[in-house]
Amino acid sequence: MASEVAVSAKALVKTYGSTRALDGVDLEIPSGQVLGLLGPNGAGKTTTVRILTTLLQPDSGEAMVAGHNVLADPDAVRRSIGLSGQYAAVDENLTGFENLYMVARLYGKKKPAARERARELLSRFRLEEAADRPAKGYSGGMRRRLDLAGALVAEPIVVILDEPTTGLDPGGRMDAWQVIRELVADGTTVLLTTQYLEEADQLADTIVVIDKGKVIARGTADELKGQIGGERLELVVSSPDEVAPTAKVLLEIGSGEPTVDTHTRKVDVLVEGGTKALIEALRRLDALGVNVLDIGLHRPTLDDVFLSLTGHATDEGEKK
Ligand code: ATP
Image (tube, rainbow, N blue to C red; front, side):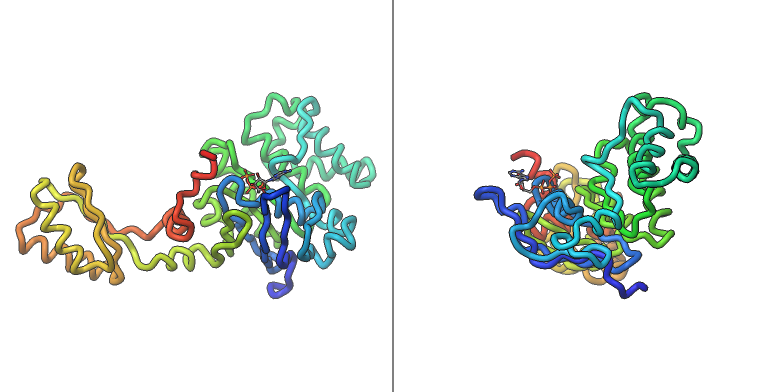
């Protein structure tokens, strides 16, 4: 089961005029796993999702979802997937129950079965109390939960979540993560697009990083973090005079040039040896009489990974 491939895309290309929205994207999701498709605005995430959900045809390349080819058998693909996110529909004027009941009826469930499925999902997504209120009065988090519940009505094999937590406050985001984790525990295969590195780190088994239509990295969160090598040793000293000798010590201990901020009296450097390097730094600085106010060892974040892979930060796309 774990070795079966639920979703695969090979060499997907899609152009809009002179824009190559996708420039040869490959990805594969083993059954029951979560793949995080990570990239800034305009990277090509939505285009990939639209192709995999049969809403858009690629110029070239091939995509299979739940054993069906998206071009040859789009109906079978649609029957196998649930889509939630940027363009999924919650009818504001209907109640939570009516929204789910309507979707169940559209999928061909008989009235009693549709009613039962709607109630079951409302309970699972903690919307029972709000079930009979119009969705327009729901909070952002409740609306997302209803939207996600809508994607699950037909018990899909593959669920595609397009930026499921964009615009949610931290509480709503944690809530959505919990729901997604429960889904995965049921064995559902999930493709999740996100601009949040932390989200991919929290939820995905494998992460594919795309930028300008190309895959620029793939692996587990740990593998990606490992790509930029080691950990960052950061320390703060008590006076500006101590910054230069501290930087000299860190240059000897670390791999690469230390970063120095005289104003905040903070010096940091990448180190290979983890805690050994930390202890060695403290020992040498103590011998020099440097007063260390704060010291810490930090694993690189996925933001650091993105910066090192692309040479620009993840939010730069938004400024275009
Ligand atoms: P976002 O996070 O903003 O949704 P994204 O990673 O989903 O970004 P896409 O929406 O797939 O990115 O867009 C990829 C590229 O293709 C962008 O440069 C975008 O401007 C362009 N693009 C997408 N749809 C169209 C379209 N219908 N016509 C022209 N260009 C388009």
